Image 1: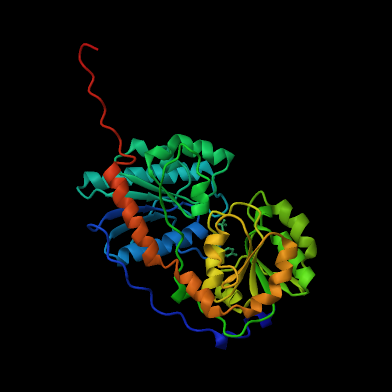
Image 2: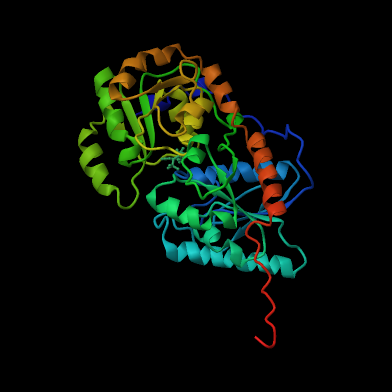
Length: 389
Ligand code: UDP
């Protein structure tokens, strides 16, 4: 990483205190089991969209007066009570059934133990892939399940079969619109961002930024084309996950020259925030129905305009002409790059404030009460068998 990327530290506005609740809590305080995935600690040191969501939502629910226990990977910290279940985190085994099943089974045992000790949870909020929802009717606590991925051929079948076992929350209207007919969507709650925790760069540098998982549908290869077409430097940051090494080696690696196209690997914390804050614009050349896209709201929080392909949740996050641009392809993206300089960073910040954690927590609060009222996921009592049967 060349030093120029970070040279304007003095222009950064310091982060302020966490927000306090603005909206009145709905109903009584709840005892909530927040079930995070077993892969990455909370907050995540680097990559981890779901983990950022869980962190911010959990803290906001605690601030709203709820009693939250966070079941998560070792190494986590939170304003809620932290409960780790497996001996280690598994960042290199994401979606491996061995660890997910183990993590969820131990969580179910903890929910039963809490009930046995006279302190039952009112609701389980599940972020944990598939095991919890598939088995939700095998335990007694109502389940609210956030769908973090897209509804595609595989997951649509899964949700058509199992969605009735929990209250289903989608993270964008675009994702909800793709739910198969058999799936009842209980609520839409966008992912949260704590804008106050993001420094905003007061004077931009000239580089374009792409940051995320190196997979074809997220478009790092198209970001390279846009950088070449505009002559601007591009910084690529993020992770190469198992099964995607070949894509990185063939489509990305050959273009990295350390000058115009720079690769900085996985980034986290203040370093990531400065990359966003000092960028001229953030590129999101996606070709899939992005269910939300945390990186877009992070860029806005840092006062940096987002230029996104008009797919998935992008139009719910980017206000065309005000906080960035929605475009159809690489040519259109390259054509609007210069105009990103006319976007006011303060408008970007205001755009991100629509996703304040307290707002999102209020939506989930209503969803929890609906799940409890509907008895979602609650195991039916075994029917008594007549002696003569
Ligand atoms: N991320 C990070 N460091 C990296 C790459 C990604 O901290 O090197 C974070 C990024 O800031 C975002 C999350 O990982 O918070 C990715 O979430 P997003 O919704 O954008 O994508 P997905 O969950 O589909 O990977």
